[in-house]
View 1 (tube, rainbow, N blue to C red):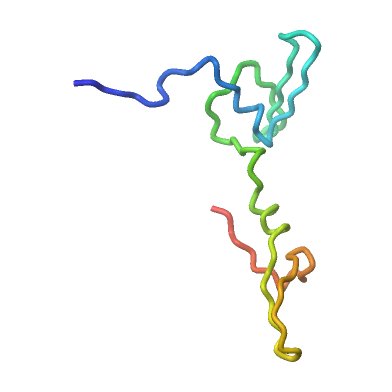
View 2 (cartoon, helix red, strand yellow):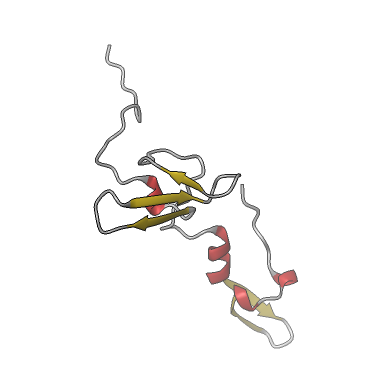
Length: 105
């Protein structure tokens, strides 16, 4: 019987997660080994990361917009019964009490 374990062996050719994480600050020098990675996700402030990270519970992909960004760029369909018009309004132009906020999980 063949048993497969997914994610059991680290692929050393992969890019570290910190490169695409919105919580990381990366400073690189001229030489290959000159790199400082700092993580802002830690509870106790910034922490220096001294190794390539392949798995992290606080990872947030920088390439995907957050819920807040999605709400800011979203359009809301509004109707005006007095003028009998229907149209889209930018979410950022709405008052706070007019916005419907989606709770994050």
